[in-house]
Image 1: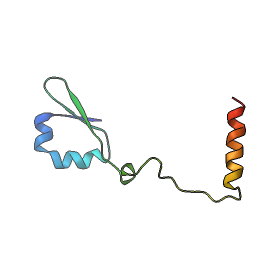
Image 2: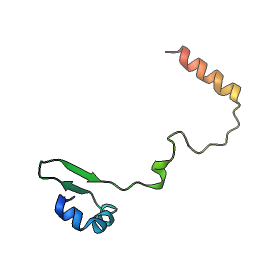
Image 3: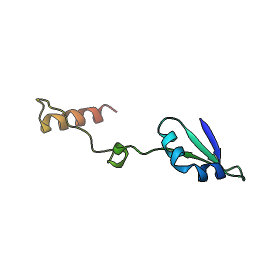
Image 4: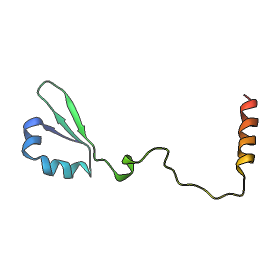
Amino acid sequence: MRVFNYSEARQNFASILNMATEEDVVIAKKDGTKFKIVPLTKNENKSPFDVPGIKSNITTKEILEIMKEARETF
């Protein structure tokens, strides 16, 4: 993890952003406040519900029956 003070970070912002793709980068202010620079990946912009489907021979009706049975056991 690399730690930079605010002035260093401001002067070297582009290189610090590049560095953050390889390792943790923290920027510390004089008052002790710290910020971590974290790159976003393309997948982080997607919904957590956007998942790939699977192929199976089970019907929707069978899935609902299984779910109903499972709920009744608790």
